[in-house]
Amino acid sequence: MAEKTSVVTTERFASGMTYQEYIGQVATNKERFEDFYKNCQLSSDDKAFFSKVAKMPNGAAKVLVLGEAFCPDVLRGMPAVARIAEASGMEMRVFPRDKHLDIMNEFLKHGQFQSIPVMVFYTKDQHELCHWIERPELADKEQAQIEADVKKANPGATEQEIRTKMREHTGPRQLAWQQESIRDWRQMLAKKLGV
Image (cartoon, rainbow, N blue to C red; front, side, top):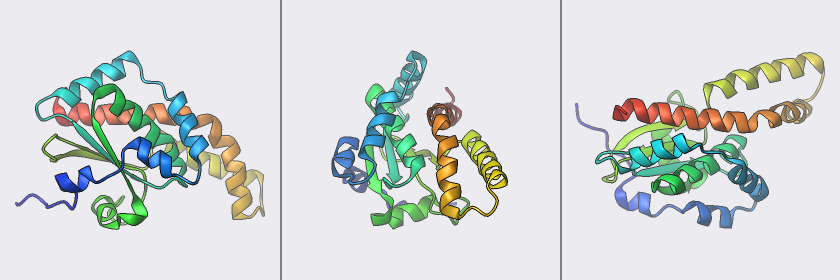
């Protein structure tokens, strides 16, 4: 079976924004990006792991992030990947989803949803190693439970009222979910690269 051809060529990857360029042009949630970046904790073990996989001959030398600044999962995830790229020497490029739907179409969640962020790890020669979409499983479970609890406690509330009340409960979980994302990326790369 032939390998699928990606729209993300070496040249296309290089055309993406660096994290700093992306943050520099963000009009929404810039402070939240900065807070998640500042508060992201990489352990010395995390730094050693990501540095090791970035330096392997066919390791994760590059990471592409597809996202939009309005999305809470992007606000939490993209700064963590930026920290990993800085600590490991990975080359990171950011693409706004809505301007790069051809890339998004390669990484649809369950083959149909334009869920973000998408993190795609590549070798230095632009071969995809693995990708990750949206949020860790723990966040999915906890968010679903929080939503169910909020709806039960607030019968008749509007969708906007539900979302506002949910943020009160999900806010304290954000850094834990960020750590869970980092664990996901480590496990995914460790499995793919046999580390």
